[in-house]
Length: 446
Image 1 (cartoon, rainbow, N blue to C red):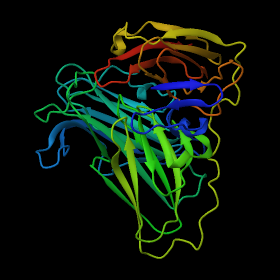
Image 2: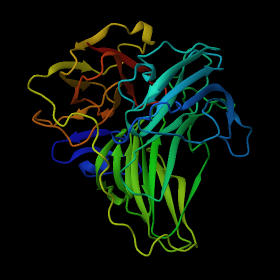
Image 3: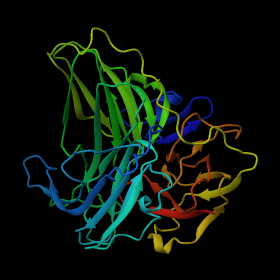
Image 4: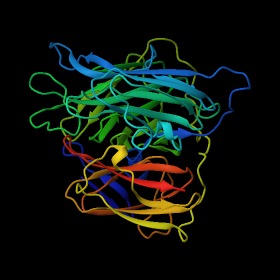
């Protein structure tokens, strides 16, 4: 369950892995990573292109069994989509799946064509779309596909990395994209939002059942961890290494040590962490995944016998460049809106969720009171903007930015954001459970 307290911050207890982290430790479970530095390309420089295909594919999800049919989000030969801040990317998307599909770009603010739920209509089967994607932010972002209608398969996700031109020095950048799958008795993957009674969760990392990360002595690694599960929070425990979190939910964080090498990620969350590989050559350190059941081995850090990268470890990681977000929020003059997170309203396609729950003038602070009267936690996501989690006394905010927040059972949380991006955007609310429906309400910035 998820609860919160003023003194000690959020606390998430799993059945087989009780966590009692400090406030900063659990920030990693509230969101993911993005930063702010760099220049736009020089005049006349060619625009980077990104061709994305939603197509039928397969994945090896059951050891010793035939591959399972899934939807794939392909973006070329590279495993990770990488760009630099200031790139103005020309995106082309084709949908070769049999059902209409939405593509959500988690963490990118203020770009209507990348809004997914509140942007263009779902891409029809056989349809194509193209738009310009200006990358004003840096950090780790998640591309998640939502097939609509009956018969649509669950789709693989992709990681998008927008590099900063200055920031924390690392020797190597590693992505860990965690995906959850549920299979019927005949091996057919079940899409989220549908009944999965009797199934067990299967997790992959970067499309594989496990991952080995080779490291040399005194090498510094940046781990970009993405929880692409649409319904399940997960925890990671990295053995034998200090884990320093540097970014959460596509925004930088003041670096802090994750307690006992543990981080927690809400559904859709992204966390950037730095580790210094100081173990002896030949040492193997497990990265274990916790989802409320027995711990699962997800990856390993394998120390190489090669010569050390440097004679001694680097000094502690410096903060990433400050985000392009307001330093302060005007809570006294804020527009205050109360929202109840219940399954009374089914999730609606964008065309049917046109009436906004509230409208805010551009530049005004908005405070949302998120009440969850149900007996289960609910994952709330704000699209189009990032938000601050307010203190219980409403006299300040926690020192981090989020786009996703877990609201505990029978709890109320308050968040605030500055309405900077004009247009219509959506808020999502989804209970934790594979069959839980995705709920949506719109909001408008004028």
